[in-house]
Length: 95
Image (cartoon, rainbow, N blue to C red; front, side, top):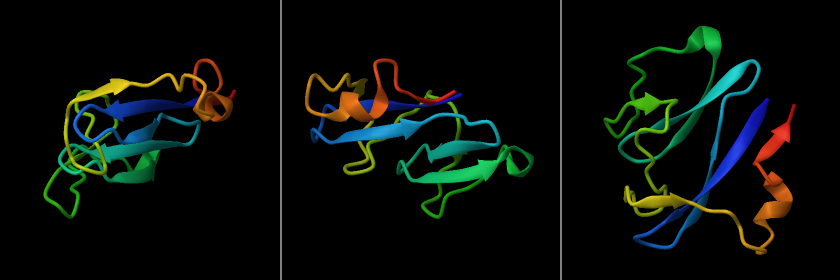
C-alpha cells in the first residue's frame, strides 16, 4: 500500500507532499534540500548522496520544505481546499 502525506511549511507557507513506500520502490528525500528520488528496493543504499551534499532518506526524521528548505513543517489535512480529494481521508492512494 502506498500513501501521500501532505505537509505545510511554517516558514514560507508552501504545501507539499511526501510519498511513502510502495510495493516495489521507495521514495527518498534529501535531508538537506528536500529533493525527491525513487529507488527500487534492491537499489537502496544507506549512503545515497544528493548533489547538494545531503543524504537521501526514506524516514520522516527530517522533513525539509522543497521551496525554502526550512525544517519547520506540520502535517496538513487539506481542510476543503481540494487536497483531500487526491489523498483520501488517510492519504491512501492504492492498496
